[in-house]
Image 1 (tube, one colour):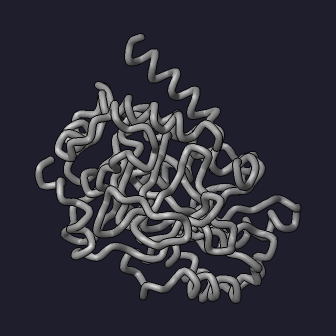
Image 2 (cartoon, one colour):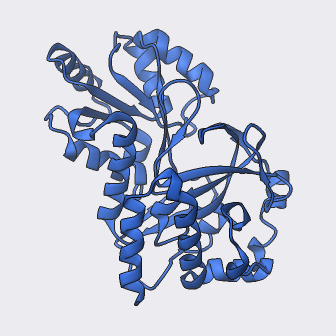
Length: 334
């Protein structure tokens, strides 16, 4: 079987993946990427890890996320349709994530959202993402654009600095019983809360994280408390995603994220990146994203967190530089 045919078979399996089949499919994707991703293959060789000897997901070496800054990771040979890039911080190197098939990402993002909220077309989608709209290469903007196009309601759209139009669209939707998804970066939602507190009860208010240097950093609990007070909301929802992923996780207001069907989260020891911690114990987060079939599905992130019984997870912070030295020992050689 040639690589293209096998890839198409894997894509179909990912579309239909169930919790019972997740481990077997992850091992299949692992062997495919170990054979066809040059950077990952080199990483495995440096670790002395033989793909043929790995029989459990917890034995798979996860690639440090920092390698997205050094390499345009690809599994197989293909030309990217586009390249997503992270915003980064001043003076830092941005992560880059090559996209082989934009429609594959759209399908996976829609499926992830629908798994928790139902079809996105049923919502009026209002996107408040100024820091992302002001630069090129945002995967979040790409996803939001698709959600807006999928929506059945003409009031959907991006609202960069047009607060009046945003509030009018929300008012019309609530008046006509149309479900509202207000998707916003944290600082923009806070600005709206402080400048235009209004009753948004019944709307899904979803923050995507990030002050982007615009405001003082708040804990998620502090942020949600302010938004709930200003908008009369019982819950604030959250989206967990990143440039390096094609899947998302969602929190529906209780602090714990639930991953998309194509995604699973594990927790590793901070100073021993090959050791997986049991549920309930904190550490650094490893993410399996099967949607990343064409790049790398096994990513050791720089997020600190805890995996919960049942597969959910919490994000508790970020690794500092001293922690990261223990996780990225092989990066200099790649």
